[in-house]
Amino acid sequence: MNKAFVKESDNEDDDPDALALAQAIPPGAKNYITPAGYQAIKDELLQLIDIERPEVVKVVHWAASNGDRSENGDYIYGKRRLREIDRRIRFLTKRLDSAFVVDPSVHHGNDQVFFGATVTYLNKAGEEHTVTIVGVDELDPLKGRISWVSPVARALTKGREGDMVTLQTPLGTDELEILAVDYPAPLAD
Image (tube, rainbow, N blue to C red; front, side, top):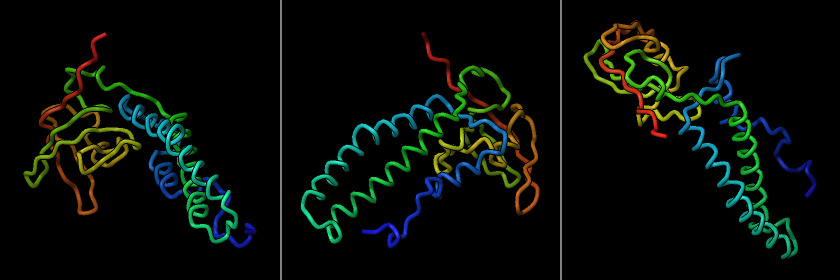
């Protein structure tokens, strides 16, 4: 089929996830990531390259050998999936290339909030929250993993246990009391 009739672009940067994450890091800032987050991205990349992509290539090759490709669902879906995998591989490769790995265990025993800290705080309403400050590629708000560029993380950073910090929210100002700061223990060599 002529590419003129296919509604796709050749622009590899049109992935909405890639654009959203790229914009999440402030201009000129490093892409901080924990060693575990770096390993997770690397594992996903290797899974795509070593397992998923070869399987899809096999299916596309088989479907192409069946003849007419214009109405061949396996071929059309396979080619689309292959483009998605290739786009994700490019994105993950760029993220690994720009990653700046920070080991939070170097702060083990410290009571000041830095990247990688697990912080328990109390807000003005008396609600207790526990969050871990991680890189933009490894955030998971439902599990309490927030990005270091988030407003809560920025408010908590450099605070110490017992400190009151100010958080600006769309609803106004909130005061957060830092109750506990914890870092993972260093791995024994």
